[in-house]
Length: 491
Image 1 (cartoon, rainbow, N blue to C red):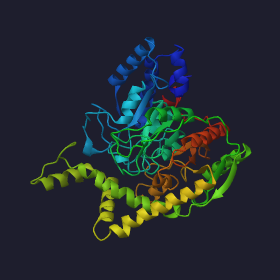
Image 2 (image 1 turned 180 degrees about the horizontal axis):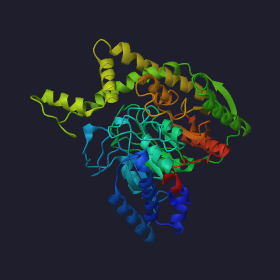
Image 3 (image 1 turned 90 degrees about the vertical axis):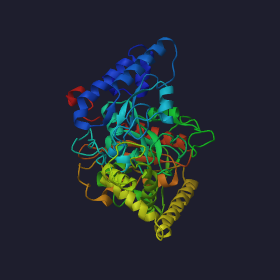
């Protein structure tokens, strides 16, 4: 087997047995990237020199007996909205072109401390706004299962890199489903942790009350490994959770016998594609056969969650992106006054989707409309939180399809923002609630494209969420890989 196709756990085993070195693993992902990037464009920036130095250091540390754990010597990728010391960070936006941060985000520090090798920065929808990774100022990423289709978004570059084997794992950010939706469309495992469990310090903010950093991997075990490396309180992030956190793997492998699983009525029927619905129902049936108690649960406020999200998120983005004005970051266009310089720089630097959301958010926050729009959206958010609380009094976890469809064609929804926004209808409610959720593959549609299965849990319920996800992984036995994920297919 090509080392690029190993999971983190498999690569670690061979690394410690002396069968492979970190330099070998880096060579494998670099070779895979060299054979696929011309088609996929998963990466914006590959740090060849930095990764080579880190791999050499990891190998030398292992020779000295300094083993830092399961991520030691493993090449990983980072979505390009996490700052990296001295390495360009653009958020896929022209307004940050050439920006080289003077520090690492906390998650980057923690991955480096765990011995991981940062291979490169991956493509995304500009400032993480989108569901297809078509809104990048540097061109779209394509889906490794079918390059004429999108990989999902906004962490489409991270998901495509993991799916095709040009990274063993990657970090994405999830504001309304931006880890789980691309994971579903690329056949990978994408996980959003409880809000505050992972530090957002150094994540360039889109919507601060919704953003979360999480891993994209090729197995549930690897997802646990990545989360364990980056979770924990960070005094640099005022929203960081201060309490202890559970052992994420404490019940992995215990199966689902006796667990209460709720199927969300409003997110599993109308609007779900037939192939997606069939794969979802088959997986639920498998859980029942394995001993789970499955029942239907209603979350009536989910009907309004999408509308609330698209008022709250743009409102927060309009405030967060005010800092990008040509004064402190990136390129600056000339103007006869400071105001003209700022206006010209922002008009040139932001793409159409970011501009649309800034305008929408500014309008929602404006005098006279604040209570009518933003205030009402926050009330809906409260209803969503209460719906989830009542549901978790009855069941241990909730399940839904991750995305209502499989990967759609590039450009298919580019002129229809509402259709694009509906791509995240199954994932947005858990962002409003702040609870953890995970997507993993549960089959292929008639066109051979992956289908995602989503498991949601209450706050700090990652152990039971991973327990169910591991059971689904074993019951489904999904092992398909995109044709590009092989030396022959990539040639």
